[in-house]
Length: 253
View 1 (cartoon, one colour):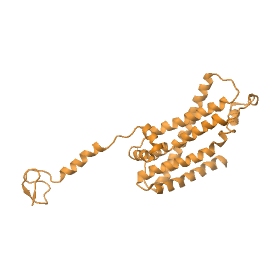
View 2 (cartoon, helix red, strand yellow):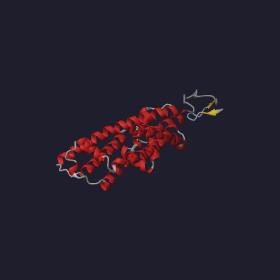
View 3 (cartoon, helix red, strand yellow):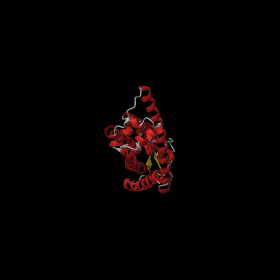
View 4 (spheres, one colour):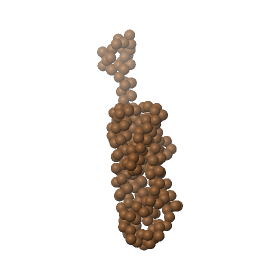
């Protein structure tokens, strides 16, 4: 015989409800567990915190995204990429011996920012769709929002790539004589600029940093499907290599 923890009367071990006081036997522990869950659940970290953790503890960032997928941080990263690209364009034009007022410089920055933001958003959506299809084929069902969140934060590598390009532009972009530009159209001037270092090596810089994106994406896959990071890394790098081959073929063939 067992004893009811509330009234103290003897009851059968098979009893679920005490016949004397109506106490539900064994339900107290279950209720306590469910009551503690909301209290133990931590609120999602701010987007800037998750971006900062990408440099110190990327696993923490993608663990957070696996539970709370969001793209606020993605847009911050895309804005940073577009801003750095627009600044690089200003640096390139500053090496041209052409007189331009401040309004022209501001308009050039805004145009460069908008154009690059659109390009980076297209690239993010293309990569997200590609990785989503690949992940579903290899691992199983996963939402597009979660994949786009993983990819968006993984694109932090492109912020570093654009920062490197900007630094190189400040150092090694040569002066272009204004005499060679007097009869050129705007499009020809832009083509001339992007045929000189460091802009003509951008693709060589782009591909290694895309590999870095694939490495970071592996953290998201490992957290989402509870698999080993090594297994997720191998599959992610394999598909990233296919993406690189595809982009290279589109650019040069």
